[in-house]
Amino acid sequence: MSQYKYRISAKGFYFNKQNQVLLVKGKTLHNGEEFWSAPGGGVEEGESIYSACERELVEETGYFGNAQKIVYLQDFQFQDSGRNVEIFTVGEIDGSKPPLAEHDHEFSFFDQGNFNKITFLPEGINPFELREHNGANYGTYLN
Figure (spheres, rainbow, N blue to C red):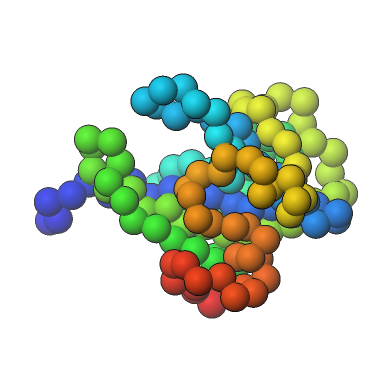
């Protein structure tokens, strides 16, 4: 048995027909500073990464979507409780279904220009580059 407790998180970058990415607003634990991130959360027992991403999207934003491809992962110390592995996917908003009225988080759509003006976590990740794999020089791409 490993000396670490691992938490597996699935997060999704979901794009609409206007090539805008849907992000959720959060606050840092140490000072309450606001930031934006991909919707996502813990993978439940027996759940696939894709199913977890799609479930979290609905819970956090009310939108339905299709997770299509795993594009990035990171492993880091999660507070004091162990390690966290975050698996990022890209996908599309399902425009055929209206969003649910109830959701857990404040969210917004961002185009590339507006994305460059916000505080996004984790730092150094650009969902537009991850989606297209155009010359990004960070992390490991999974195909």
